[in-house]
Length: 310
Image 1 (cartoon, rainbow, N blue to C red):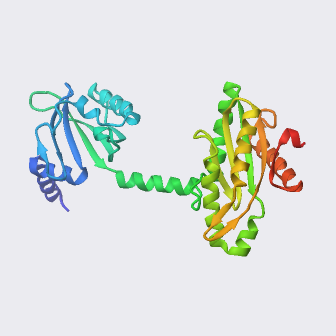
Image 2: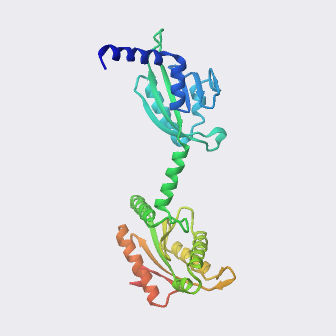
Image 3: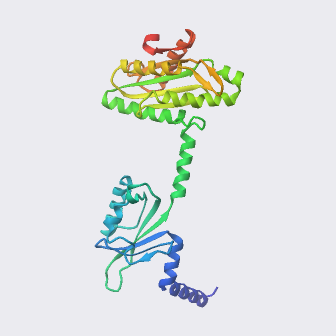
């Protein structure tokens, strides 16, 4: 391509981009909503891909629009817009809309400073792209990575993350923390006698029942097979842990129904307390397992605290 042809094509591209209709069509394909804002924070123009268009897009100023952004992301979006209006550069912020206070769609907002118009006044564009589908996929992937697919409880990986975080909090605030290890006694007999489908049905029911025995702030996780762990952060005393363990064992002993079958099952439990039984996650987990195995060796269906067992 020679210089003349290149100049001709460049001129044609420039003419296309300066046409309002062409620019509008391009923007509509690139984003789902767009707003033009002036330094007085007034929304001058807006449209969305549904075809709805007017001079103010049903809002009279930027502040009114920001009220429909969730509180978790509102501060960051406000800061980014304020910085841009004061002469800063472009930005990208993700936020969730909350129309009428209800969770709505997620958007990626790109703030773009625009060249001054013929009067010399500066304007800015806020281009929004709906990323709800992407956010839902991300949440699903996180759920798969950190939760057990059968019981929907947190898995070993997430339990260890929360244990480390809770330990750091307990150290800063000089609080107690408890780790419980829980195994179903003779669970193998269910799979051998009734099949793995019945075993899965029992584990789901077991998870639901035990979860009702702990607080919202506690974490009940499936570590694998019939092995479960419970994290009790922010406990007042060791006696409060005894209350929880007695509640759990009592609930398990109430009996189980799998279809038309009635089962009597028990569980073995070990307990380790921070800071008495360990200063870090590895030590606590090792000691809680030692307490658990002492219960198993002693006939099962019970609970042992590490300091009592050793």
